[in-house]
Length: 308
Image (cartoon, rainbow, N blue to C red; front, side, top):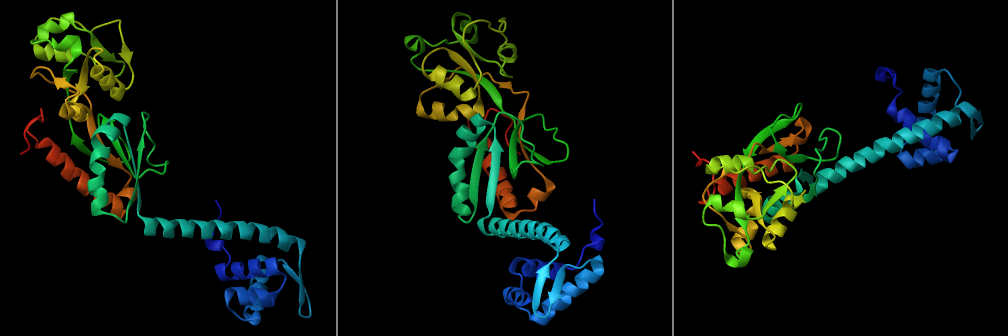
């Protein structure tokens, strides 16, 4: 890496680039609002510092040297990159863009229906909601906040637990013509829908105190939203997370079966870099989100421990 302490004077580099591009000290002076004498003085000082001749002078006429042309191309590229970076910062500061990434099921079914509240409170902030099944690299990708579903071990990031979640069975009210099971033991005669991720039925069976084993065969579904759709269509009984099933339960498309819940081994977390946490829009989103979570957990149908 170059020693930045030896970097030539930025004003001199800007004067040199303008003169090289316009082939004129006078036009360069007009462009950057100084006198032609100041341009000539700055370039002369730059030549002395570098130990090379950048321009051949013939009275008022100048001609850039071959070394000067190569140096001008590098300086021009660097100045353009600096100008673009400055414009980007100014745009971001003006727009207050906030990019949030979350698991598709959580993004669509819990966060998105509530985001209008945050947008109403902060109309000057542009919110970009991304959904992804893979774990985003918040230190390298242009994402401000990651709402993660895991165990909370995310080295190098600011991490705060949002809430736990809980599994319970749901079914369409029309499943088997409306003949829904009245006790957990009757699930043995039902079609149990399964996911190929963390949603195992066995912990719920154990919590319900019934001697059933993890179902095998039949339909295996990868996406939580698709699982709920299949249950709504009457294809079977799904084991779902509380936070993502409330829309269908509230609308009557699904009904919750029994009062038994099993705590999910994973939880929801807020995560961001230290740099992102310094942004006003991230701080505002964090405050709003924590309040939304507190309100959600205070609802009467929250299956977890009551809020202190």
